[in-house]
Image (cartoon, rainbow, N blue to C red):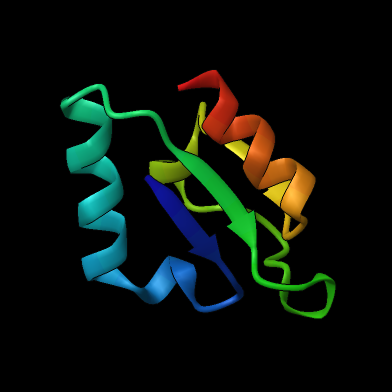
Length: 67
């Protein structure tokens, strides 16, 4: 699962629920910052322990290669 993270993620109940479901099901997750101007000051608790990366093709490719 690739989750897009922005300043609004903490208020996105549906997105946070999907991330928690993926964690419970042990689905690999990569959180991607949408852009450097939209990074949250802190990430929600639901994202704890999940790799966070900047939006770059090498970041996405590295995640997919690990699957």
